[in-house]
Length: 77
Image 1 (cartoon, helix red, strand yellow):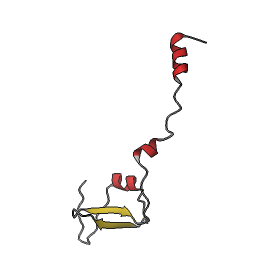
Image 2 (cartoon, rainbow, N blue to C red):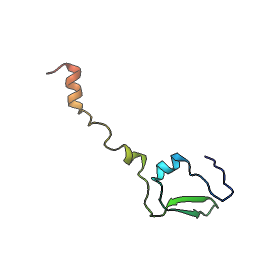
Image 3 (cartoon, one colour):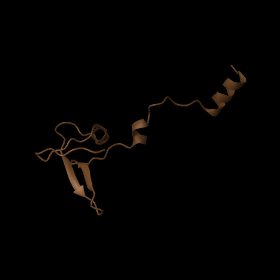
Image 4 (cartoon, rainbow, N blue to C red):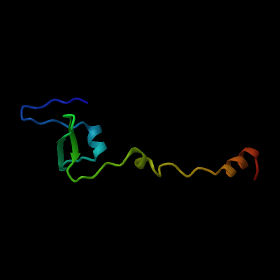
């Protein structure tokens, strides 16, 4: 995702990045350079965003057991 630097040296952090990191107005951020010379944007409080797996946990209802599925297929009551 590309963005443009303003004459004041400001950039807009794209919404998908803000959403992923949980950055809201007033959130402090930190910029660091990694060993490869890339700039990394972090929340200054050191918290890590939830993984996509953590975010999905508990979204679906519990699955029926194998025995319950077999009973449905057999037409058992």
